[in-house]
Amino acid sequence: MRLMLILALLCAPFLYSQDDPVRKPAPKAGQSDFRDGEEAFTKGEMGKAVEHFTTAIEAQPENDEIYAYRAAAYVALGERDAADADLAEAMKLDTTFSLAWNTRGYLHWLRGEFQSAIDDYTAAIAYAADDRRVDAGGRAQLYQNRGVAWQDVGNTDRALLDFDRCIELLPDQPAFYENRGLIYVDKKLFDVAFRDFDRALELDSKNARGYVNRAWAARLMGDLEQSVRDYSQALRLQPDYAQARIGRGYTWLAWKRVEMAASDFQAAATIKGFEAAAHAGLGDVALASGKLEVARQEFSTARMHDTYSEAAWYGLAKAEFLLKRYADAETNARSLCRMAPRHADYWRLNADILAAQSDWQRVVAALNRLLELAPGDLEALKLRLRCYVRLAQFDTARGDAEQIGESDVTAGLIEDARISTLEAATDWKRFALAYLKSASSLGASLAALADDADFAALKDDPEFKELTGK
Image (cartoon, rainbow, N blue to C red):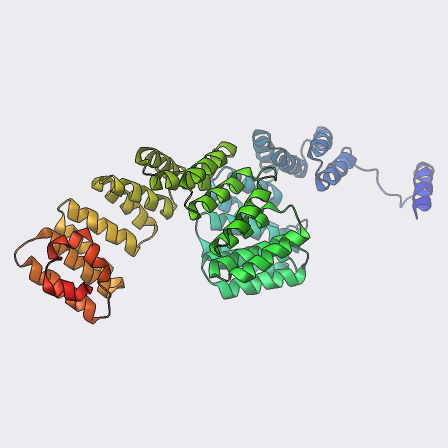
């Protein structure tokens, strides 16, 4: 076959020199450079791709496709401004080329402009419907891109619809099942998630990432044995897979097998690019072992490797809090909340640190933010109620007690008793004991209240002693 191809190339000039009415037209100027650019792009040789596309543009300055392809190559090279310029030119020449809209959507996504990314991906999907250059696989990729952006703005329902469409268009692509499975994990629909992860592994049983995804879901479900098995299988397929090593470390830690967790984190620390996550894991091992100073050092090392590591900042703030270095803990927690303002656990830690310093007004502010992110969080409501009591805002505290009672009747009654005891208004003891008796009759254990400082005024009361078993 190769010999025939060489002969054909050698004969071509002679054939075209004849007066042949059916001979093919000569290729357009720049077309071979365009093809060479596409080939280099496919191979991941983006620098060469840009060179070929640039030569092709010199020959075909009105070709929107070449600008769009060069823009995509520029994005891969991290040259976003150059990509912006090429996309603007491509869209000026033809506003309906789906690749240009998709690439611009990706640029928006890289910049964290997720709604703008969604808008551009939506346009790309619409234009791709009538574009013969985009096959089913290409359309599926467009839906996947938009699904990821929907997920980033917190709209998992819309993300699911897009991932469903991906699977309809390309039902044998394991990555689409993995993406949908991860959405189901976010929704805590673990059984459905496992079906998708199982299907992804049926399609590609050698895909280490598929095992890691299923292992993560198993860990969240509390099936630690399954999680270890899947992480271990991923590591058999890819021994240097740092995410599998770190994930298994946290599973061992949840299983209280601290030495095995430490071993995995130490191994991960030798893998370039994952030092921060590995040292944060070692910090968590130290916390679990009660070695607070060691934990502080490990989290500091993690932050040194990655200034933006949330795990490092969180762990360091927690270690300093437990060491009662409240000023340093507060500084780190405040920085963490600025870094990731939509993470409820960070506001919870911030509130705990401020509560340890009796800064009740600021505790309330932190808890208000936490409850915006996690409405109905009972522990946050209980702490806020206690802050209001200490600020002598008893009516406001009763509002929280009522809200607590809507979710947990006995907890609400206990908090009502707390308010009555601390307010010490007329007949406070009668009301407090009545609330506690009601809680006890509903099956609540009140033993912990015997050592609760808020109920100190009742500690010598016979009825209180009977209720608390003291």
